[in-house]
Length: 577
Ligand code: AMP
View (tube, rainbow, N blue to C red):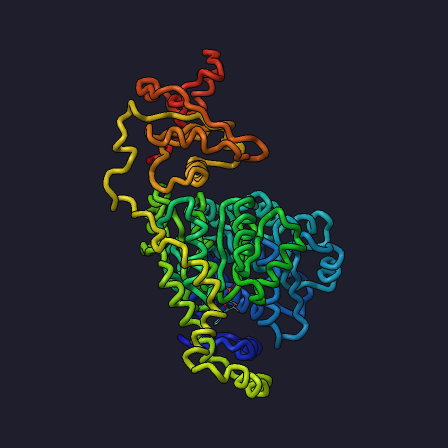
């Protein structure tokens, strides 16, 4: 079955599909649509965002409801307001030739009266976010006591966002006799639990592999020192002149900083994170959708549920803490059968995460070298040439030709071309002319013994630093901060252990004076950074300590004085370097 006509859709849907220009059903549509149309069953479908899931449940839903009855027959729960709006619009577009059907979006951060007016007109299908849905239920605006169909879309995201209790409360008001269709990109335990609780021997459809990345996405990673992360990002953007991409950072602060730095360096970028108001976020998203913004720098939370077509690249500026999040990030590209690239920038110490992500997505992540400056300039020049050869000359250009030719009549064709390249690409040539060509640090395992192994234990110098987890650092990000502040780009800093209010790290003897002087004028969260040498390594005591909790109770019992703490007792988040 390879055409929409073969999968049992009624003419009103075929007409809408033709209007939309869809050529053939996607894999998830081929599997789900006939099954849902022909049978009344519960379904778990595992498919990435961007694979055509909305049509896979939306079309059968539209075809199965009775539009002559006004009661609510279908409820679709979605994790975010952006996705809720998107699903509603998408289903409305499939219902274009089905008169009088009412599909209503119910989501927070928007006027509840307006939404309630639309519901009162008789909503056949409600698309809702869990929070606003419960609010509407409490106010008795919505009634789902007779629904026949319930769709849990992006179930894994809903559970990640802590909506488990809300889903239970919402569905307690729905009848037992209904069909539940669950769509999820990944299948963590929490999703299986939901399936068990709410579904009746569901059929399972898996598009690709469980938990796998989208099939149209290729994955690549680049190893750099923490200090060079931003420079690497710029090169990766510059070597892809037509990039339309989403850059993911771990924290709001980093997201804002990366976006600001990109803008300052002349890129068309914008930040999207939770410190922006809903209005600001909507504005950014609208501009991104219209491609007025080329690079969206976002946190995972803010980017949840955002499905924009034609994203060419996802860049993991930093890897997420949980590998599943990577699946969601990379699923932002390669949508609607298009190809996409997911790029990961890692430091040597983060590199071990690559293997575990490969296992999860069941796909190879290829190691690549950061392009050198000649390569970037060449690609920029070729892109300019392509742009020139593809552009349709405008009428106004034709009118200006005589004056233009007159102005340049003393130049040869070659001179003109050289000058054109200079005018257009000077930014790149100037910028890269004084940069060293290679940026990569060697892949882990490819270098000789690292410094940690080379340094004799008795030469290891241990430091105390007054930055900790309260400043939102873990050992990895703190190590990056220390190295970038001091201009180190190898393995000079190791054994980083973070506590709540302070942390410890080690170096060899050669780095000591730089480390003690290097933080003089730096501040974090309005505090001066303070680094001092602390007690020597005590291997016997280090072995004794197991967990941070135990260490804390030990502290209490023995009343160890705060300034006499032996850092090696605190093995809380030990780096593996
Ligand atoms: P979804 O996974 O539902 O968010 O869909 C991703 C994008 O693919 C949306 O923009 C849809 O309009 C589009 N789409 C859905 N089905 C098809 C299809 N069969 N052919 C081409 N595009 C599609």
